[in-house]
Image 1 (cartoon, helix red, strand yellow):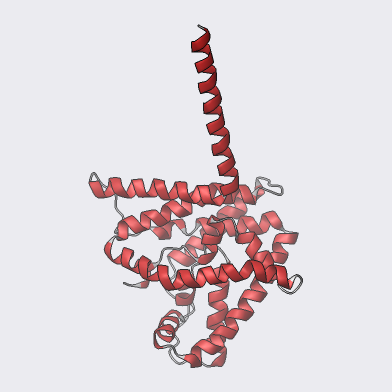
Image 2 (cartoon, rainbow, N blue to C red; image 1 turned 90 degrees about the vertical axis):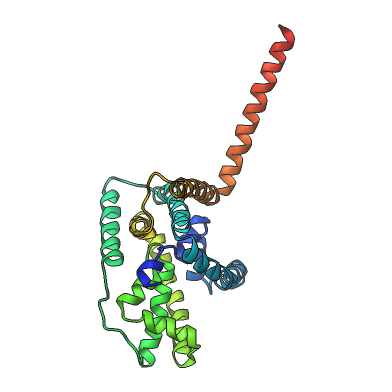
Length: 281
């Protein structure tokens, strides 16, 4: 499948947002050496989980896209949409005014323009030098850290996507080793900068990130996802609703579990009152 067909806009940073772990992760990486033991204990299982996920679920997702593309894309759309209310709540957490709606809108427009209509700003790089290989790692780091900024699209824009895919496929260490250096540098530096921006300009930073996050939504579906009066469309919408519910629930799992407990308690109380009323009548 071509890049345009595979592009879902669902990066690792978006998954962290869905799980409510984005800010904690950025803070842990950005302040890695300030409280090294605590941050490592938080990041280590996260990194292991991502590693296992890449190895296992990349194959599963490839299979699902090849054989059930429409269902898979609607599942991803549900995951993204389910995060929007919780992400919006996060944006407004430390003060919010109407001007930030304009910031979100501009960031979303910029994201859609860059990531939906861009066909490559730079020529394809086939034989990179050391610094171009390092840039590859930095680009992967930056596009993975900021929600809504898809690695495949950024790398394609920089002329590095084919190099990235071929280097992984051929296990080309002459490219992967310097790219690994760039990846580490990029993760540490970009996380540090974002953490500083969040600390000093919380609402502005999250408004921009939220706008970029919204810009991925048009990229989740493609021409294969046309709804009609058929069973496939009904199943797709059902999958969308289920995925939305799962994403929304995981985004605030503690709060939602508490809400469920309160709801169950109210039902029990109402049932108990009705039972007592019937006995006394």
